[in-house]
Amino acid sequence: MRALVTGGAGFIGSALVRALAADGVPVAVIDALTYAGHRDNLSDIPGFDTGQLAEADVRDRERVRDVLEAFRPTVVFHLAAETHVDRSIDGPARCFDVNVGGTYALLEEATEYWRGLGPAERDAFRFLQVSTDEVFGSAGQEELFTESSRYAPNSPYAASKGAADYLVRTWSMAFDLPVLLAHGANTYGARQFPEKLVPLMILNGRDSAKLPVYGDGEQVRDWMHAEDHAAALRRVAEDGRVGESYILSARNPRTNIEVIRLLCEALDRRLPDGAPHARLIEHVADRPAHDRRYASDPSKIEKELGWRPRVAFGDGMDKTVAWYLDNVGWCARVSSLYGRQRLGLGAAAR
Picture 1 (cartoon, rainbow, N blue to C red):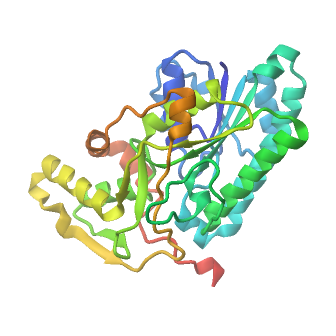
Picture 2 (cartoon, rainbow, N blue to C red):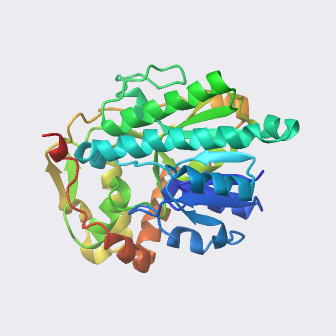
């Protein structure tokens, strides 16, 4: 395998690069290095040549073409995207421009590159669209998303990812590009930008700042560690059936308030002078169109590809809290780009 990872300097992308490089897989990265992508996320990876990081937007077809021709990947992992629901509410135009327009541009260039390969190389090539369970909308009380669940997005972010998924499927059907799709659950772990729930709660708790909880906090999310997410993506790329989609889930549906209280307990153990950190919890107005529940059934990837998560939820959360508290420099650098202010008020649409 020779892996090209778009968005590889971001959270899940850098976890994937780290896992691939650890196994000696040659990796190249395309990343625009916007607020959520950082060279720091790649600089300490043994076996990864930082010269293989192209600072470029996937909408820049000429740069993408140059990277494809120079690196000659056998797999393209497409993770580059605007990924935050709140930001998509405040600025939907950018979300669609990057997530849909970027996917279109990448598909065009990947298809031309693939067509120029020899027969054996064409057969081996894969394009993996890294999607989300949010394209399915809000699950019913006992419902589990499967690969056949109907798309029903409720945020601009989810709609943009759904539209990108449809583009990928179209390129498979109309142009025979060998594609795969992966719908990941909510992911947590090291190096996640602090606008997301888990790092935001950890850093606010460290600083004795309020822990804002949308609405009643009973919204359910399906949680998976970044290392497990990266391993699942690799398994899909290597062994998945062309044209198929795969649900990626560690079977960990938890309410937001449950996750926050678990983080508070971990902070209490690490920072006893600030305990109890649960006193910092503050319920705030809910997000517009906030999906109530995500929960997925990963039976397909488990049965067909033999993938199982390895990181237990409690252990993963403890490990994540420790990483953010121990990596003060990284947190300070990325926090300078984001004041942990409330997003998702829909100002752009009013």
